[in-house]
Image 1 (tube, rainbow, N blue to C red):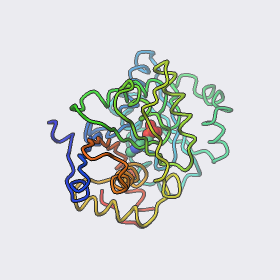
Image 2 (cartoon, rainbow, N blue to C red):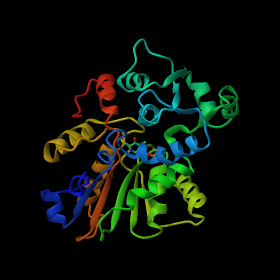
Image 3 (cartoon, rainbow, N blue to C red):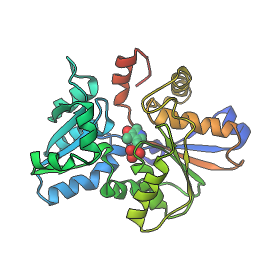
Image 4 (cartoon, rainbow, N blue to C red):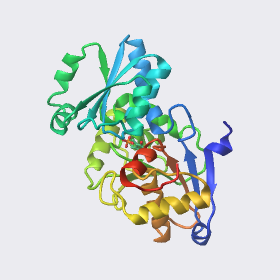
Length: 302
Ligand SMILES: *Cc1c(COP(=O)(O)O)cnc(C)c1O
């Protein structure tokens, strides 16, 4: 795929008026089989699992999880069995995310929310490992140190010069990898998809562990969560639809839509100096739109 497809400059009256250059890095098109940041996060984990001769990979996620979708696809491509521990009771029919995961050969195990929390927050992690002794266990959301290593590579091919790089954050793993990859150059803006600012210390920890130092050239933006994880407001849906009309680029409502909304809002509020050049990372997540539309009766473009 040629470079000009992976980097798309946006034009518009606000950008022109404020003297801002805004370029989208289309990670959602980078590796079409497993689009978005979840491939970056899985890449070295898959390599590790193969090298260590694990026969199965196990991970965790909600019923609409992009990570679960990506892992299932990776399992099919790399011929390794995958097990998805899914939060919540099994519905009478599988939603589009889980249906595709099952078609990709993933074994789905549904656990109630209490047990899920115990598994993912550590207390019962050992019992999962005992139940599946031959499985390589990847944390919820796919974030571990090998994921950071993969996400460092997101910055490798960005044409210089530029000033800012923007990325949505869930667990903070992807943006932590970007921060490590930049090694204190540029300014990184992490747009939290969740309410609260606890991600700041998580990111600090991930970065410290990987880089053995603390980089301070980043800011956690917490004003665009729209009520919390996977919550939305009409204004967000309207933005995603008009963005699609203007640029023919689909955004997901959980991560990339909130980030792009935030970037435009911050441009309008003069957060960026005139002449700034911003790279916004489109981390994918488009597989989740079908399930979102089905669940909420919305009509977001896919
Ligand atoms: C998972 C995901 C994120 C968040 O990545 P983290 O590494 O958990 O912060 C961002 N965007 C999309 C589209 C995702 O699927």
